[in-house]
Image 1: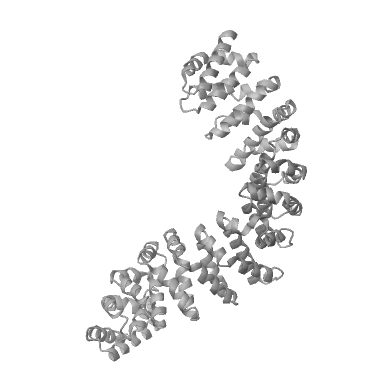
Image 2: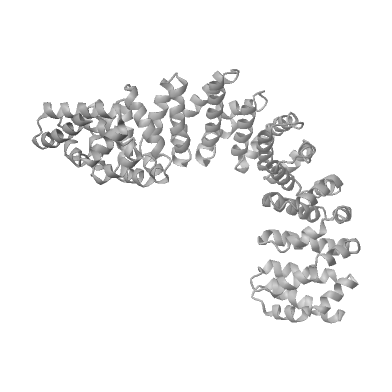
Length: 557
């Protein structure tokens, strides 16, 4: 280490004189010392004030530049040296060197910048602002035959792509084209994996998704799937998963998805369809998720239902009923739920037997599956007949009532409440109401009327009004113990209640007058005061309903 001290003293003198030969000897000694004991040597370099000298040595003309950048890269492997490198003003000259023609300079410069900015979002953001992204993309294009430089660029892209601020800059370059070109050349798994690690964060940006699709990435991914689908090797299975996951990610962009759908005639769409009946769980999953993504607009949904996709998804679900794969169940149910949104599809899906297939998963204990199951059923029961048939299914209603108490899973709880209400609203059936009363569902509908979401409050109030109009007797006790009248009083008195909530609350009050005990509660709570104030409400429907309700209350009393 005495030797090192001499080298550092000598370096201070030669750095000023710029005697290249002597300087080069000093730099070689430093690199040797770093190779033997990086931490200790780095501390000495910092203590000796050498970092500040390096800023002046990083010039494109000097023959020592690559070695200086190499030393900085080695030093910056130590976390404690990164801020001193920044303070010594090394970032700006290093960024300038990315315009060099010398491949060794470029490689060591890239390593130095990468190590200094490692794990620091603020420093990486600074690099982005200094314009390194277009420079690096250009370098990748020029030096694609240099494996070390290519790897350096990919590592840099992987780090920078994690930052949201980078996406716009990447989108304005030809990164998609360069990466796809590079990807096509790779045969080694590790190299492809490296490119995948850059593609995944970039593909989160919709503009880049479209660029990747246009650059032909999808064809590469489909080829990988075809090559790896029958392999048992761990690497191949991992690559199959990465390729199919990335494929699904590309379909999350509206433009890229529509481009690949090509009116349902696209070869990509056809290939994805063939994944669903496959025996590979990963492909089944990706296929179902892809269909769920294609099913994001009515036109696509109608086309797919007319061309038999529902039967394929039902077959897939049937294969996963007993001890099935939860992610596949969830994905297939998501696809069915999206396909059921257009009105014209509902009857077709009902007659295909979708509800029977979906109900097989009632016993699932997995909240994500429960959530999608509920959503699919709710989408399908706009038709009175379907709502009546499901609403009389005691097993279903009992499970809904149970899930209405799933406080740990707000989504499942909300969907269960909404489905209970929808069964009543769409069936308008006494039998359905009786089934819900017998299963203890009334209290949940009353609680739903206090939801923070206006749409849910409203659905609950309409369902409760139908109960009061059609089957008040059997529901009377449950409505009392759930304190419905007190809740309605609160909703009407609260200035923040939406007009439709006030309107439907008054409709419900009038319907409750058919019950002696509930009507007594209405009288005890002085509803007349609250209702008469609403006669001058700015919303005409509310004001009219207030006049009608006031008349009813006055006549009855």
